[in-house]
Amino acid sequence: MKKSVVGMLALTAMAAAMGSAFAQETAKAAPAMTAAEKEQAKKIYFERCAGCHGVLRKGATGKNLEPHWSKKDKDGNVTEGGTLKLGQQRLEKIIGYGTDGGMVNFDDILTKEEISLMSKYIQNTPDVPPEYSFKDTMDSWKVIVPVDQRPKKQMNTFNLNNMFSVTLRDTGEVALIDGDTKEIRSIVKTGYAVHISRLSASGRYVYVIGRDGRLSLIDLWMEKPAVVAEVKIGFDARSVDTSKFKGFEDKYAIAGSYWPPQYVIMDGDTLKPRKVVSTRGMTVDGEYHPEPRVASIVASFIKPEWVVNIKETGQILLVDYSDIENLKTTTVGSAKFLHDGGWDASKRYFLVAANASNKIAAVDTKTGKLAALVDVAKIPHPGRGANFVHPKFGPVWATGHLGADVVTLISTPSDDKKFAKFKEYNWKVVQEMKHVPGNLFVKTHPKSKHFWADSPQNPDKDLAESVSVWDMADLSKPKAVLNVAKDSGLPPTKAVKRAVHPEYSADGKEVWISLWGGKTDQSAVVVYDDATLKVKKVITDPKMITPTGKFNVYNTQHDIY
Ligand code: DHE
Image (cartoon, rainbow, N blue to C red; front, top):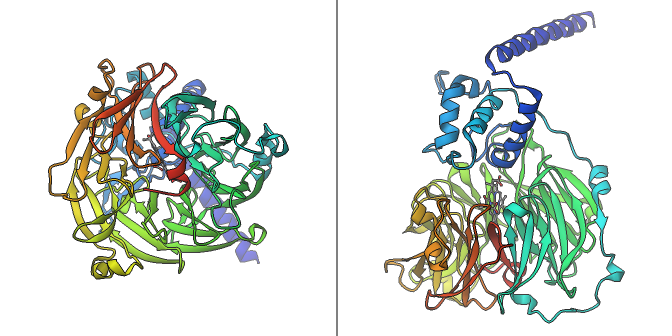
């Protein structure tokens, strides 16, 4: 007993000494900042940096940004240092001009003073933001139109199947655009830098998640669709989906939070919080991680289950929602860092990018096991990916890459006898189609003969403003490159108008591309005829500010891609 008290005292003294040595080192080396400067930098960090580097700055898609971090080789020699080692000048250069490793340049987004401020900020020890409890979630919950006061049938004449929910990123809104007439039917206030929209199984409700964790529920049956319920599920979020298995249609919603690292299960028609589950725990390498963020979430059609992909741990969770009081979860280890993904054509396998490992993980939702870990080119970024039948290799799922000049085609299994001869290719990369780096999203449609890929993160302005289109019947034919900015007829601007996120109309005959311009520039959604690749309509409006993701109701409801 005595010994252990002495031991504890010794440990406490050691910790205090270490703590003060650490504090002295930080205080000595980290540039001083006023409280106002820290507040300003904290806001910029949340808005611009946390998505890739993490709130605690342990790194994911982006590098570790802790002041004292270091990477050692097998002989124990330090090969890379933290932000204190990099120092003010080097950090300013990295933030301003970007790196070959994939860090984008911020010299056209942040001022010189802001770049200097951020360089100072990241040499200081990261702040740990507060937690967010079930009670906090509950306190934020608002039902704006109670269920019994909502329409009993569709009160408008829109073809709801072909509505598009379009993210207006910088205004924190979504535009609901009629796919048939191309008219904006409603602009709805949602969360900050709104990220994605998903549909309820019935197609009636749209769920929109903002980066600030605000989840908005829109009722498409109203004469003018509007938000009927809201809840804040955390401080920083990216993903949402609904229960789609037979018998559970429109019953539940689930939203994933980046900070705090947790997911929230809610009632589907009111967003009443039902359960909060933390995702903190061990990585696939067996190390504890304090910030394992919830990346993509998708609802299974073959089981009452969500596939919840945890970025930092590389664990894929299969969350069974048939009894949420006694929640059962299967944990499938894959690789780091999980990001976005989509179903194969059979909707049995979910394929997700482990982007820092340059791998695609495929989980078999029928058996609840990992089906494959496929090595692919640098930084896969599929969006939801794209499925088609390759003339030589049968059913394939495609992913683009942020860091490589190819689109990768992976053979996927099928129970259809006519595809039995392609079994030998399953889970192999069967082809890499030549593209350009900086690709974020790929898309096709079961009724289309074309395959579309954007390249909005390419440093070349022309390429960032263009999309590429392949003829799937003959992939050896040169791809068509369409300059969407020029095709839009909008006046040229110094700021890049990034052509981003191809999305099909419900009938698979049109492809909608966002032109994501500067906040004060005129932006547009350009609609192409998929058969002729000619512009059919340029949807533009002073309110159309920074459009990015577009979610066609029917295709999103049924996961058609
Ligand atoms: Fe996204 C999907 C995270 C930046 C547009 N984005 C996703 C998903 C995740 C994610 C986890 C998958 C959600 C799902 O399926 O449940 N995105 C992140 C980031 O962490 C990141 C890299 C940095 C950040 O700070 O947010 C980031 N994303 C962007 C953008 O800058 C984009 C291009 C423009 C924008 O609107 O912000 C963007 N992300 C999108 C879109 C989807 C998406 C359009 C949905 C694709 C789909 O077809 O389903």
